[in-house]
Image (cartoon, rainbow, N blue to C red; front, side):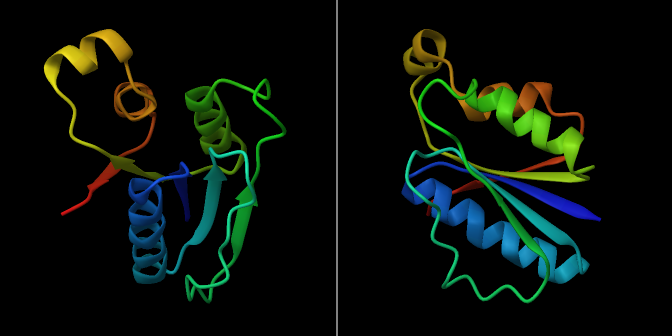
Length: 117
């Protein structure tokens, strides 16, 4: 089994990474962290003993973020997706869209959505 985690450079991204590590540990699954940021993803402190793969972007023009995550699900045969979400107003959702919203709607696998307290 493989868990895919979409990790932006934000507090929600760190929460998603922690939840993905917990889920992968609980299920004895591999973990693929799709780094949605432009800086290297620091996984030195996550305490994961299983197989971890980090998929990095190669600049702003690399790919659409949601498409990159969906491609990772297919490439790594992901069976679950973990994402971080933030609370947004109805107007914000309508005008701006969101990678998390697109993933919730388009993911071919079950999605674990994590939000901050």
